[in-house]
Image (cartoon, rainbow, N blue to C red):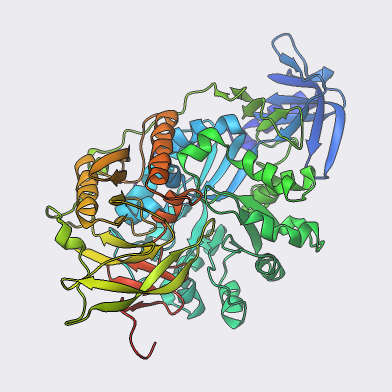
Length: 604
């Protein structure tokens, strides 16, 4: 696959002579910021009254007096004592989870001070393979901020437990390592494969390390015994699946970075940051990230600024929290000479704020250009011309009916005991529950908070529907919620209390080409169209966020009280995070990594 996209950021060698000349006073700077309280995350200091000179999109001079850098055409901005901090970095995230393309995601987060993102597009990789990754990579490089791509490692995430639209191979990984915007391998979700020495997984890691790039981790197991140590030996350099202090400590002790996350539904910072704030461990190996944020969170609540504020609220000193969202991230990816600190030679990504604790994002600069002020994005975020077939990826194969969502009971049974996926609020893992359910006319019926869940195959048009049960959503009445965002295989997940509504919801998404739809009592309450790969929209972020907010409100109107229930819904097919999940192959026991019977047997 020929690469034709070049990064628009001038390299240091291309700008070095001018940076030196500006710093020495032989040439004028493009921009000088005066009377700034410069936050040096590299030393954890605040330098009052310092000045910063920018040339060719990079910092040329950072010190007490940049007067010698000012010429007739230099733009001079007096910050009047306000803080100047580095642009914020998101160390691990999936753009697709924002329901937006890279361009619209960038436009949504730039006003929040995010100037660098390290993205793993494994969602689109499951739908379109390496070609989908290349499309995301190319649009990412077009943006006015830094969007680096990690080549997805696991499509499928767990071979033998799900079927994806495409598969990623070691050859794909090796090819991607030659692209200009690739900084490493995306999260290695197949941790059992690494632990068992699977040649394919180790070949992907080897290809990444041969390219001298970073291997992302994903160890979603509470077992910190030999299996965890084997995973660490396999090469992953970080992990974001920790949920408690012990997890963070274990990862850092093994030479990994503990990435602690605050997304739309993942609240894992508070339980892990104590490893630094209370236990006193070295903070260099702890990094903040979001993982998954939907558009409503991005537009209304923030992005990495939200993470940093939360870390501060959890007891972190503001300067330490900023390190975890700037220099720690840059260093981890080998980009400390490019990003993450206000220092000569680095890209001039910076934020003006009047309060380090509340962190209002007043002005944002990226590569020395003012890109946002007072919550408004001031620059264009160019869109890729997405191919037409990327907008027609939902293939149902047939007209779905209520009967497709029936769970047939064993002959003669009046009641059965079934395995139930138990949703855990604000956590990615699920519980493995059981419930005794009634049988009516040979069909198992949900009751008492237990809904039906179905996975509808949508990549190859087979018409296959896999059925099971889930609890925790609290739906009442005749409800159905369907989504073509179904990590990671991205078939279609339908959760409901009424089979006819489930069929209608599924057909609706087939009609619009993907997205999320909420139905109650025979009527559609909300629809978020996501036509690109059934995962994203290239409509303005504000429009998508408004529809996403209406979707959240519609789920609440159906009786759901979970925080960001949509995120929980979208992960019900993620067969690499315990305990129970659903896939096109059946109900998956992720503690054993095997497909299991829906009905509880006598020996279980």
